[in-house]
Image 1 (cartoon, helix red, strand yellow):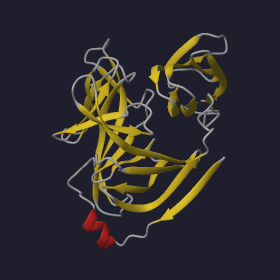
Image 2 (cartoon, one colour; image 1 turned 45 degrees about the vertical axis):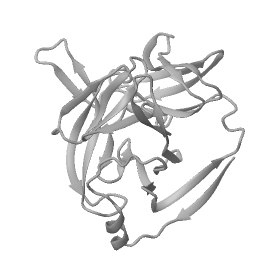
Image 3 (cartoon, helix red, strand yellow; image 1 turned 120 degrees about the vertical axis):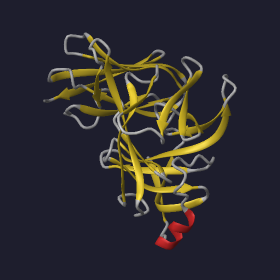
Length: 287
C-alpha cells in the first residue's frame, strides 16, 4: 500500500519571480526535487540525493528516480552523464547548440540524443515566459549517404527541459511536472509518496501501459537486489526481436519504453531477468 501526503504550496507570481533563477537551465543543488504526474501511473519523483566521485575522478550529482542516467554533472552549459560501461563522460543535454543537433551516441542508448526543437512559452509550472528545449532520441542510418536521421524512432521518448526548472515533462506531454523544490524553495503541488518497507523486498514486472499500444508503451519494474538485468522482447514464435536494457541496476524501481515502429502488429512477450528471477508479460501491438 502507498500512503500519500499532500503538501500544497501556494505561490504568488511576485514570489516566483523573486526566487527562480531563469539564467540557470538545469539547477543541480543536492536536495532539489521534482514530482511528476502520469495519468496512467500516478506520481513519481526525481531527486538529487548526493555528490558522488566516480572512477574517472569527476564528481557527479546522483539522481534518484531516473532510469537511464542517474549520474550527471554540468560544465559550461553542457550536461554530461557518466557512462559506467566505458568509464567516461558522454554529452546528455546541450543548452548552447541549435535545433537538430545530435548530441551523443553512447552505450547507454540504442540511438543518439539530439535537440529536436527549441521554443519559448508560458506553459510551465510557474506560468512565466521561459525558453525550453525538446530532447529526443534518434536513429542514424550510416548505411545511407548522406546519413539518414530519424527522430523519435527508438526507445527513449523525448523530454522537455525548461530554463530554470530542469525537466518539465517526460514522454511529452504525458508525464508532467506538478511540483518542485529548487534551491530550497517549494513550488506547485508536492505529493510525497511514502512507500511501505516491504515494497522493494520483491522482484516485480508490471503490466505495460498502454496495452494495446501503438507504437510505444511504458514498462515498470522493481528489483529487490542489485544485479545484472536484462529486458528483452520476443515475438509469438519465441524469437528475440529487441533488447530494451542489459546491464547493472541497483535495488529500486525503474521504467523503460518499448517502441515498435518497425515491428508488425501482433502479440509480443517482454521478459525481465535478474539473477534467478524471470518474469514475462504479454503486450499487444495494434497498428
